[in-house]
Image 1 (spheres, rainbow, N blue to C red):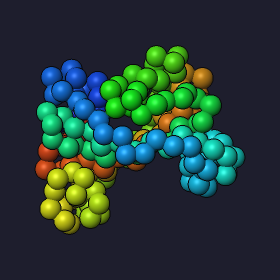
Image 2 (image 1 turned 90 degrees about the horizontal axis):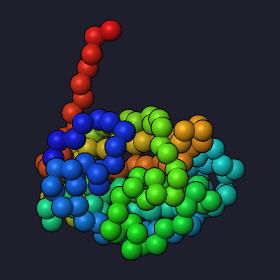
Image 3 (image 1 turned 135 degrees about the vertical axis):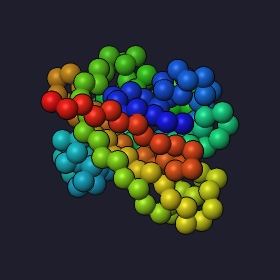
Length: 162
């Protein structure tokens, strides 16, 4: 899967390319915000946030491990919701309009757990993406840390001279 770097969701991108997205929910819980999460989501350290971790598939192949943190008061999601629909799709349905995101893309060696979940040999490379999103009022609404299967995934960027 080659994905343009745009403010879209992987679920929508896979659906639009007829890749039959499916999801296994690994974690869906309320946790105390770490200092880093609190700063990124503009909440008090130690306050509660939603923590979600999912394994997304395309055509039955594991593609990415997605870990997201959201303000607890943003929306309430059951595991079934997260397994059958994309997070951004669920957010839009609740009236949350994502307007801007800051994203960092990188690469590293996958952990043993990541390689196992992604169906790769131990020590395989993974692509990483960290994204902080804000709604149309400027409120931070999501912080995501994702780990992509490098053998099956790439990002595409269009550069324009100003």
